[in-house]
Image (tube, rainbow, N blue to C red; front, top):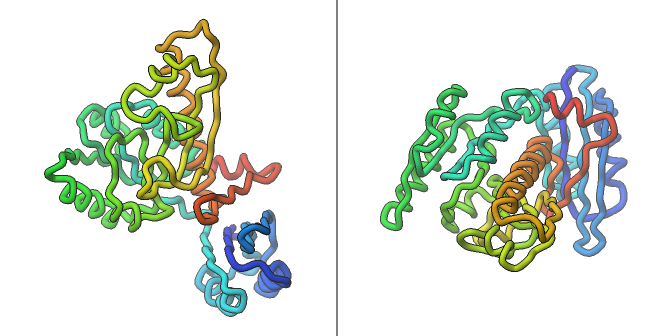
Length: 294
């Protein structure tokens, strides 16, 4: 039996849950997990349902059959077979801690994704990537060639079927055009749990200011640098006895963890956009192990 995930965003009104559950029951499907959120501020309703197709209904049959329900409630929906791993493209510059972490998590099955390639504007991690049998694409970026470089990146995205781009400490600013074209499909990791200490040596800046908490924020990329909808955050407490080097080491650890958790939530369709914010449904009790192993 196949397991599917259905996500729904629509204006809040009566009868939505009944219509969805009734449809699934009529199609011979059994709901195994359901989460929902009614945003009273925006008047929007969000739902994520995972279910078994016990009578062998195909993805097309389910999608076509659900269309009248979606149309009736003006729903934005996504239906996905959980057996199909999401195709992910990583981008990195010269800080490799997030790249190394994601390669390891993918290799051991902790992050069930299909890595279709790594793009970098430097050669630092070419050997590492190739040794993992993953295509490596060196695309240098300058002020003069940036449009051509981004065009090449988009060629890779399209030819590989990339569904998610992850900026694993990629230190080039993407153009507004690319951000809009890939809206909701690019995740970045920022070196703070608030958009502060921008620019060079952020951890040195934090050390000089005597910061007591450092952290990281994973968010979707928009034209507003480091201010896209937030997916995941975490912090680490710092004491006066720790050095600037300690800040860097602890910061790298929390960046890697936060980015991995954000990707995990996205690939399992637990993140729904709500304007400039997100709705992030947590794994239900007992479901994390199955999500972890894909």
